Image (cartoon, rainbow, N blue to C red; front, side):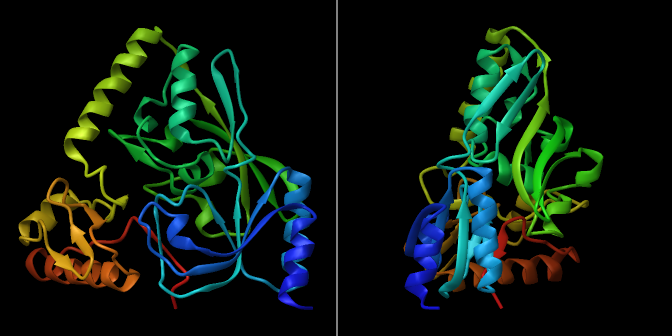
Length: 301
């Protein structure tokens, strides 16, 4: 079957875009082209897309908002599935919220605020989708998704089912979905607490001001590049080796927040990884500590 006919098959159940730069799908603005990017509109359509992918032995990858991913410079001869155009419904009832995977977690936290529900303030500045933040167990300000998620609605092995918080095996920047990339997060249920709207808004506003003051939001990045090891904060170790402002090609260690590696000037994935590896080597030499990436790598050998 020709490539064009595969695109036609996929188009029966989703919006299909071909040969799309992955740099346009990620906050780092780095990456080669993806052969297909598909946007299914319903769970039923998603199921059919997965059947087509399996029938033609195609690779596939779920993308959220691409805010925590480093794509290689190579082209990806497979299918990227995105839910952020269509799976965007959010429902509130008493002290809980169910948000579909394509919702921006920033929007969900703001809607929770309007409903007088507290618990997602820490996520009010995380530039990811609900699916993405669940996958990564994203967090900030000593809070994370595991602390507010009650259940996750998942499409796995052709079946739709709710998985409990415990079944998701959350830990620091990790969930069971790392082990099962074929399990697709459809929605999450958050258990929240009632608080005055003004109190919630005040906390969100203060954290927004802090982010603006401390993070390089004017440059493409994937947020914090390295996980914090047990021994110290990653930024302290990077600062300790004198790498504030260090540049390799177009990739640079931010002078504003050294755990943010930014795309300063048309960086390639190779530039970025050379800088990552150099930092890891220098930190290991000076402190004897292994720095591990928080950013997910995709389409690498």
